[in-house]
Length: 231
Image (tube, rainbow, N blue to C red):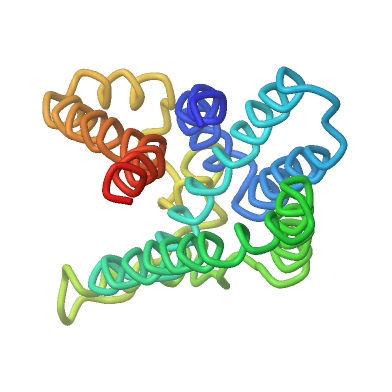
């Protein structure tokens, strides 16, 4: 679990930057393909160290997925619907985690632990195919995504729809902003890192991760010990 997390966490920052520049579809496809192939290859891992290396690489691929999903929500949904869309996205992740927690141990007990990774890798490749064939960026109105136009119209009731002289360029295009908007990616990142609330949220997330990973790693051992003592 640590091998995956050590690469997943820093990848989120770089992947988010790339999603803004090359688009959701490319990064979503790249991330799902890399993570799926790494997990699939675990079926053939000859040692624990190779398994750790493959899990670390899978963390890099998985780190591309979440920023892509959030970016897709920003493009497809106006402000008034984004919290709901993110909620559905997070619920789907947790539901799939629960289904995996129920089914994968059965596969591992019946066939062997390698087949559990084989099943997850195969499902990942199916997600990759869906991402490549099914996802498209939203249509644009006057050079800005519909969600951006809807936000502008909501903020200025009765005002004329936002129109851009032409397609946005550079970082403005990646962010779905009209042409001429401030587009310094480095300045934006530095500003973000200088924001106190961002660090407070990160600290809360750190402690949440400590609790979550500790529970996942040690709950089974605890329950087994308790069961043996009571038996």
